[in-house]
Length: 148
Image 1 (cartoon, rainbow, N blue to C red):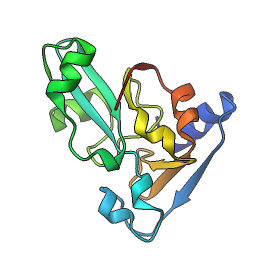
Image 2: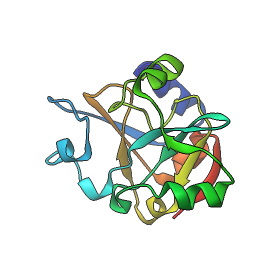
Image 3: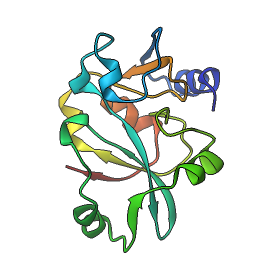
Image 4: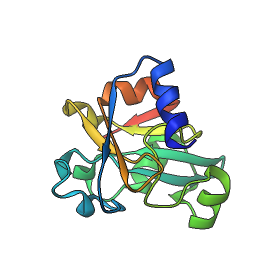
């Protein structure tokens, strides 16, 4: 989905959001300083499982993902960061600009995000950021599991 399709998708689901434009690319949480509170960053990663790709919407405050813990919690035998080329070919998005909504993959969701009124994440365009309530992310995505 491009940004217009993402906005139409969100409007169709009656989801409140804001698109923030910035003059330099945001490819990591550190790039976001000065645009929004970095502690409210919600990066979306794409993970490889034995069943295919899944999205993983996480809080920047959690640091690294604990793949062993997540494998046990969700019953995966294989769980790792997906290959960049595979992400691009299967989702159409580049690493660093994975959208919070509209990814087209089932997603795992970090419950820590629910502590915030709003979070900030990708739109598929590194010059645009999505500001959205975490509860709205749950409505906009196919959430297959939640973790802490």
